[in-house]
Amino acid sequence: MKYRMIGADPAHRREVSVLALGAMLFGSRTDEQTSFAILDRYAEAGGTFIDTSDNYAFWADGGQGGQSEELLGRWRRSRGIGDEIVIATKLGARPLAPGTSFTDNPEGLSARVIRESAERSRERLGVEKLDLLYAHIEDRTVPLAETVEGFAALVAEGTVGLLGVSNHAIWRVERARALAAAAGLPGYEVLQYQHSLLRPRNDVPTDMFPDGSLGHAGAELTTYLREEPGLTLVAYSPLLAGAYTRDDKPLRPEFDHPGNPVRLAALRDVARETGATPNQVVLAWQLTSDLPIIPLAGASSVSQLNENLAAVDLELTSDQRARLDGAPVPVRGR
View 1 (spheres, rainbow, N blue to C red):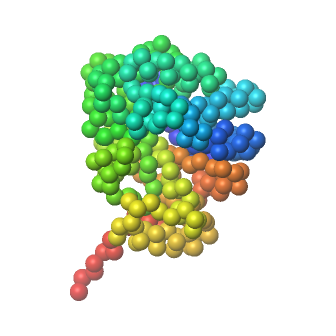
View 2 (view 1 turned 90 degrees about the vertical axis):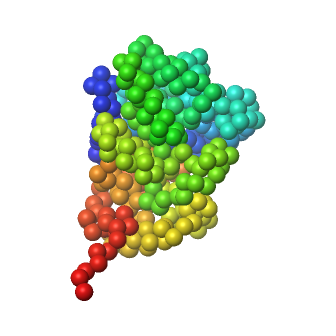
View 3 (view 1 turned 45 degrees about the vertical axis):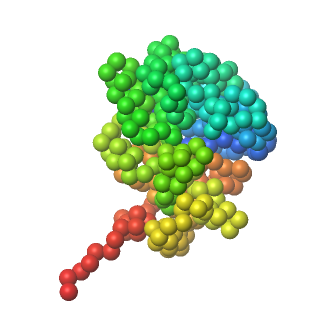
């Protein structure tokens, strides 16, 4: 395993493995025995960065979530896991009542919710301190300053370490960080967005994002990362839920545009040249980026996890990276 630092503040930054493990379906669709086996293998391989949320997986049983955090708490206790494993969780998108969703009935990001939800997460995980806590989705019904101050209060009390943000418009991320800086408060240092080799159209409306998705890492976010070297991008769904390798997992409609066939062809070529799987090439492409990217990949079996782990040591040539990036072929003089 290889490692990198997240966070700029020396008081809270942590060294984590370069490949994060998503625990979204642990304790719900992925049963406890399988989940424990995956977690054990990840830890055995040197993995130290696990991701969850207080609303995972509310859709599995029509409830409010919490199954993933609860399972991780049981695993930690049964294995004697301490602070050597960094567990990140999120709040803000937990449905307020069973049978509802974060699209119409989210807990939100008020100071009261931040405090109460963080406390519930600490209890479920069985930890005194949340290593990394994200604002999961936007809440424009609450003043941004209240949200910033609510998160900062938990850091000051020592119950939260690093702060992160996911699925927010970049202008709101910058505004929140500016408010925190002006007040001398800790701000968001880790950004979690969907990012993969294939790029979606960001203007396709959804129930959650009527103006187009705020959850994808587009050009605005990547340029922001270049200008703010203290930030880290945790890239969720890097393998697009199996769409790179499984015929029964087609790409979503927003990925149907002229730019992606070129990247797909390059991916297949590089996979053939390296003898790696397409999934491994995608992860290696992120791992060797000049941007601070940590791929966050889930697994429903130990064999899937082993495939992902092998990507850590896969080396790509500069030519292979250029082709994967979709770089134009230079036009030579006539």
